[in-house]
Structure formats: C-alpha cells, structure tokens
Image (cartoon, rainbow, N blue to C red; front, side):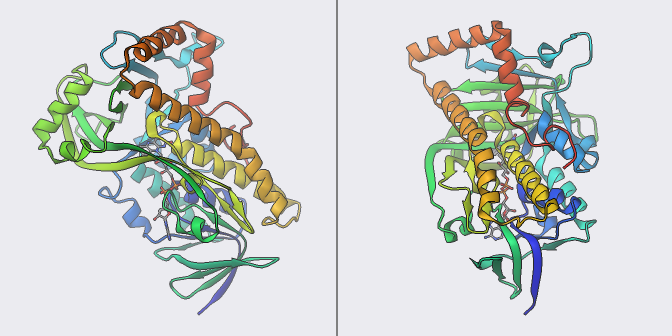
Length: 415
Ligand SMILES: Cc1cc2nc3c(=O)[nH]c(=O)nc-3n(C[C@H](O)[C@H](O)[C@H](O)COP(=O)(O)OP(=O)(O)OC[C@H]3O[C@@H](n4cnc5c(N)ncnc54)[C@H](O)[C@@H]3O)c2cc1C
C-alpha cells in the first residue's frame, strides 16, 4: 500500500475530468486522475458512437490547452444551423454572418462536430506527456473522507491519495456524489436518444439540421467525409422510450427507411453505417456543487437534454471556471480546497447551469406537444425569431458559448 500527495485528485477521466486535468496539469499543479476504464477502451470505436457539437467557446479553450491540433483534422465546421417544426414549411435558419460587423469578412463557424473517441484520445495523449499528472487507470475510489487540510481517497488498488481537493467528474451515475451526501433532482423524459452515423449521396454543406417531431428532436449533424470520400453525418434521434428498442432492432435497410421517413431525402439516399447506441434521457441537477474538500463538475453536477448539443460544452465551462479559480488561488499561495474557494466556483457556475437546463427542458416540452394551439404558437414564434435579427443574435451567441461571465480559457485566453 502506498500513500501519495497531490494538489487535486479527479475522479472520472471522461471528457470533462480529462480536460480539467489537462488545464491544471499545464499550469503546474500535481494531479491524479482516476477512472475505472482504460484510456484505450474509452477511445475504442465500439464504446461511444456519439459525436459532440463543440461550441466556438469550447473550441477556443481546446486551442489554449493544446488539444485542438490533435482533433482539428477530424473536426467538421458547422456553418449553418437549420431548425424546423415537423412538416411545417416554417423554419429557423442561423447564419454566423449575422454576427459579423462586416458581412464580407469570413465568419467564424458556430462550432465543430467531432467524434467523442477522437476527443478522448486527444485528451489522454496530452495527459501522457505531463509528468505532474498521474493517470490511475483502471482504478476507482472506494472510500473518501476529509480532514481540515486534505481529502483522503482510498482506491480499489489499495493506494491512498491525499489532496487539497477531490473533483468528482464521474458523469450521471456518480457514486461519489452519493457518498458525499449530495442529493439529486431527477426528471425522466421517457425518451431515448438513438445515435448512429450515416453515409449519404449529397454533401451536407456544413449544415446542422434539427427537425422537431412529436417523439422529440431529430438531429442530423455534419461530419468530415470518410477516407473513401463518402459524405457522412451523425444522427441523434430522440424517440419514445417504448418505441426505441423496436427501431434499434431493424435491419439496415428498414432503419434507413425510418430515418428517411423522419428527415426527408434532401441528402439523397441515406445508408446507416457502423453501430447503433441508445441513451435514456433525463434531466438531473445536483442539489449542491460542493462538499467539504470536494466539488462536482460536468454530468456529475448536471445532466441535460441533448436537444441543443450543450451538455459537454456546459461541463467544459465548469472545467474552465474551476481551473481558473484553482490556478489563481495556487498562485497566491492559498489553500485550493478551502470552503470559500469552492463556494466561489458554485456561485459562478449556478446561473449558466440553471439557464441551460431550463432552456433545453423548455424546448423539449414546447416542441414535443402536438396540440394545435401550441403548434400554431411555436410556428409563429419560429417565424418571428427568424425575422428578428437581434433575438437571433442572442440565440446564436448562447449556442456558441459566447454569452455571460466566461472563464478566461473559453474567451481564448491563457489560464
Ligand atoms: C445522445 C447524446 C448526444 C450528446 N451530444 C452532445 C453534443 O453534441 N454536445 C455537447 O456539448 N454535449 C452532448 N451530449 C452531452 C455530453 O455527452 C455529456 O455532457 C458529457 O459526455 C459529460 O462528460 P463527463 O466527463 O461529465 O461525464 P462522462 O462522459 O459520463 O464521464 C464520466 C467518467 O467517469 C468514470 N466513472 C464513473 N463512475 C466511476 C467510478 N465509480 N469509478 C471510476 N470511474 C468512474 C466513467 O468511466 C467515465 O469515464 C450528448 C449526450 C447524449 C446522451
């Protein structure tokens, strides 16, 4: 049995925990990151077929952290977002040129679509090169306690770690959250997100498309062409919990027909490729983001509906805000696990988290209703927002992660 001392122990090396480790490690803090999976398993194609929409602000942080060059070749820029309401001819189109002072200048994309496995691979590649970051994989935390100066963490492997702070980045099912006595508000959407990739005949033109259907939103997200030059998109198809298993069982031909039925044929013939994944959807909000010498980040603190592709971006803003607070405190020689430092993190993050949870939950409810008066109102709303450029600008800045009190990394500045 060994005992080690660190500044920060991070439980969970998913995309939020690993990004935080890169940020703290690059600022010189001594970090241990623990996960029950190996980095190879997390980056395996069969593990997670999802892509993530990386908002403009998150991409700027990834540039600062040296992560972006490792994924840039596999990142597909989003140049337009088009939202439509089922079969209604009304739609809402977002164009980043509407944010430019001079529309003749090239516009920044809203963000990029990147496969999760490439994001995870890049994060672990960066961590491997940091001598002050210990990657303890596979391992897990069996017990934790705190005293006035340390969080004390006992691992399955028999090691005991001492740190000024324990960061919980274990995702939605976090067991440490419960062990720390932090409660959870949870609402089950009774929806399942079906995820897969498709090849299609016609190019997507870098447009992300979302169509709202009664069972939930259906999104077609642009990917880079594959090695043979086939055009590809990633699908996030929200379906009723009871119907999703039937769809998942269909053969490729019938599955492709169901996709076309929901989304039309504007990309020509659509052929599903590779695996299919299913994610039950629920809104989850932790009652607290902190406990003595412990703090929650990412999905361990908040799990939101994927309707707007914002869950990871929200978690990356947690990581950027926490890294900034901890690095500033360490530079001043302060105790980075002190209660007042952790409260300032919780205060900073609360507004962004609650806003994003409310907006995504509200959109899902609004568009899931098929009642005629609600359909009429939301179509009128879509038409109105489409014509009102200042309102569109607010939505666009929000989706780009460029609104509010942003951490330095998200603004594209060094820690
Ligand atoms: C269908 C779908 C599509 C999405 N699309 C987008 C999108 O386009 N853009 C976006 O921003 N967000 C998106 N999201 C949300 C996003 O995927 C999550 O917010 C994000 O993955 C959360 O990352 P995390 O690191 O907090 O948690 P996780 O990815 O869940 O990572 C948690 C890690 O902790 C480890 N762990 C857990 N428990 C233990 C334990 N007891 N011991 C040791 N290790 C443990 C796990 O092995 C894992 O590696 C989507 C979500 C879904 C469901």
